[in-house]
Length: 66
Image (cartoon, rainbow, N blue to C red; front, side):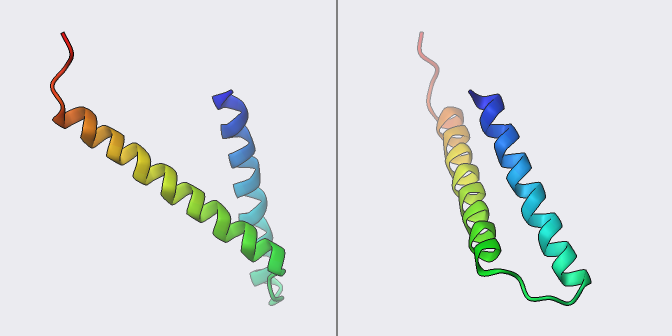
């Protein structure tokens, strides 16, 4: 299941970044849907990073179960 999620995330991130790069290269405005998808991807990435960081800190501070 993780592999499918990672593949989908990578595909979506690649599409958004390449579309934004092409728009900038051709001096065209970004489509509203592209901007919204980019913001959603960034928010999802930040949320996952914060959750995994919190989990790592929690794991480091709690004593191991015997």
